[in-house]
Amino acid sequence: MLVSLFITCYNDTLFPNTGKAVVRVLERLGHTVEFREAQTCCGQMHYNTGYRREAGPMMRRFLEVFRDAEVICIPSSSCVAMMRDHYPKMAAASGNRAAMEQVEKLLPRVFEFSELLVDKLGVSDVGAFFPHTVTLHPSCHSLRSLHVGDKPAQLLRAVCGLELVDLPAADQCCGFGGTFAIKNADVSAAMLSDKVRCVLDTGAEICTALDNSCLMHIEGALSRQRAGARCMHIAEILASTESGELS
Image (cartoon, rainbow, N blue to C red; front, top):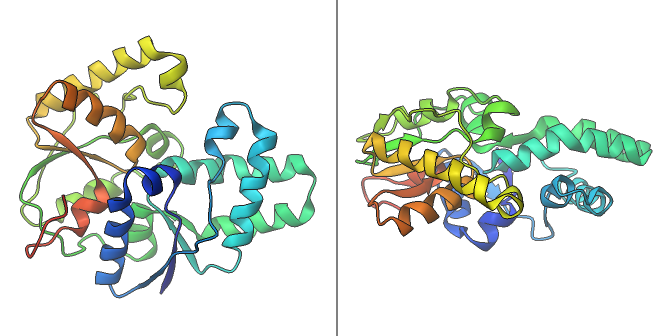
């Protein structure tokens, strides 16, 4: 299968290893991955901050760049949620019939990374080796919008050497929420403190998630506290093998 990778802004700018890890996993499973260099942003930051008109061209860009893609893999539940929840509304609000049809045709080919592996490819064991204790933070978009369920946990439990430990109050937000963390810094910091305490209570070495935005927020607090635990995107864990872990 030819998989088109939409890498997302966070990953492209701050966490390039995530995209490399996705490619490693998919190629290990026998698939071909392409990267369309004309891709830009999904428009989520603009749309959620109230700049909905400015988000329109980004939606249209995505539709144009990936219009003939067989399957689109996105290692971010928040970006996929933006597309599924808001692209249909944005296209309808524009009154552009062609855009509405493009959205309707393209969205069934858009998958968050864990969805692609478990639902589309029917794989839970990707041949990974990661001898560490790991706890999973289910991000808000993965829980409440995509409803990915236990797909990430299925993938982690199948990793050789990995011990998955439950995260207390796992369904609670980490407090990031994009610009929420900037506009409501005190509330965000309080929510983050609760989340970090739960992570540390697990005794896990690694906190993982489907979204690097959450992990960036959590990692910041862990590093400031010199807590010893660290964060990794689930793709990096799944890309690790006995011959060499990603770090």
